[in-house]
Length: 199
Image (cartoon, rainbow, N blue to C red; front, side, top):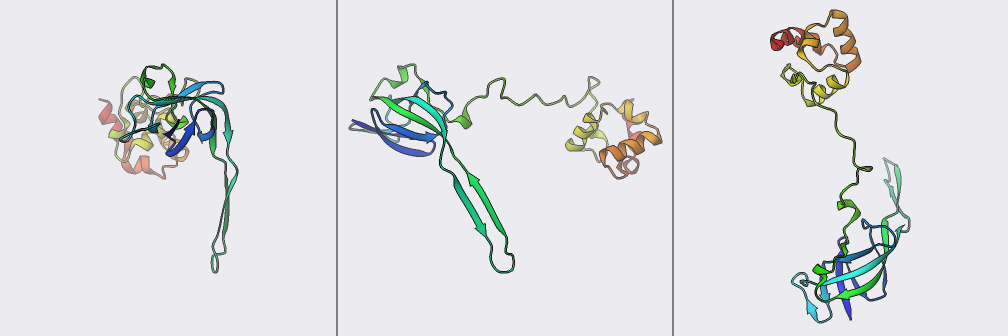
């Protein structure tokens, strides 16, 4: 008996004992995974998938495919060249069992792609810094300040209108230079606006 399964945007015709290289799965070597997107198994043909069918496989190893070189050469006037290399991330699996029905009750972990797997605490990106200090001042109320500039100001330690209102000419020049604002603070009148907004 054979089955046709779908994973990683590709279809594979498999039988028990087959060894396959599929798009990278979120699994470690030695894990048992189950493919639930079965297009055909035995005499049953799905529309598009066969309900309750599954293919179980053991993960042998996480590997890389052969190196592919992409070379681009533009001729005549431009004469530029570009070379890129790529090795696809793959998972080596051995098919252990074909289930015509009852796969949804087997309790085996579903085979999902590494790109769609939930991240663990170690690999998750660090939390974003708070947008504003405890005072809750919204620096975007100043003219000429958008989300990107607000983020720059917060990273520079400027979080409230009271801070900006107390700036001297030396502070204005220092922040203007530090943040690369090219005279925007004085031109837009942030100090005067902050004095009105802090009240």
